[in-house]
Amino acid sequence: MPRGKLITCEGVEGAGKTTQLTRAADWLREHGAEVVTAREPGGTAVGEQVREVLLRRENASLTPLAELFLYLAARAQLVAEVVAPALAAGRFVLLDRYLHSTLSYQGYGLGVDLGGASPAENLARLRELCRAAVADCWPDLVIVLDLPPEEGFARLAGEERDRIEARELAFHRRVREGFLALAAAEPERLVVVEASPPEEEVFAAVQAALERFLR
Image (cartoon, rainbow, N blue to C red; front, side, top):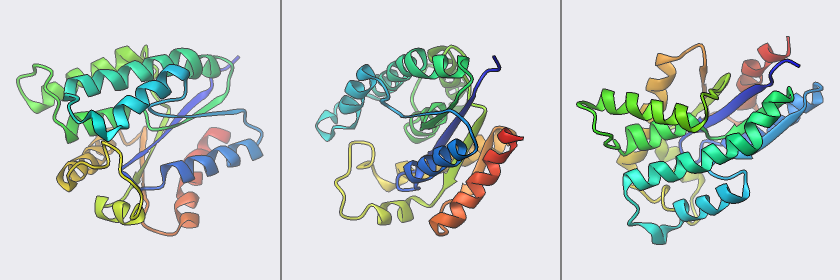
């Protein structure tokens, strides 16, 4: 049986990832695909418990390294329990965040120190940690919903912010820059979709990115 396809949706807070991922899953099912969806961190019993630790604002004392390894642990469980079996069964797996969130949030946003001699070396080491955590299960397609963080938070106005969302705007700007830098480095895997237009226009671009998998 042919291996399934792993498609991930990334972007800053408020970019509309969950909405677009849900629409993508429905669209693929309408075209006869078997689809499994999950969110990160989460998607398993263990992962949801880790998510609670990571996002609670009371856990402000978490260090960047502790944060990183919690994300990697939840992801390793998700891949072993959900992603790898679904791909082996030939299904589409759609994830709300994955490896490139770690590269952008912990790498570019936090600048996590992994003992490298430069930011570039730290990022390379981070990429290898990500690769090891998922047993080299790299996505076939990454849809990056691009939006200025200010616009994303305007969409979330009135909602209580979690520990990550509550970080300063400069952090979220670095995260956005990280996603765009990663997309520029891997244009064959990462597709940037402008997320400012109305939902229908955004999904039209998402659908165009998905269509090559149904040919």
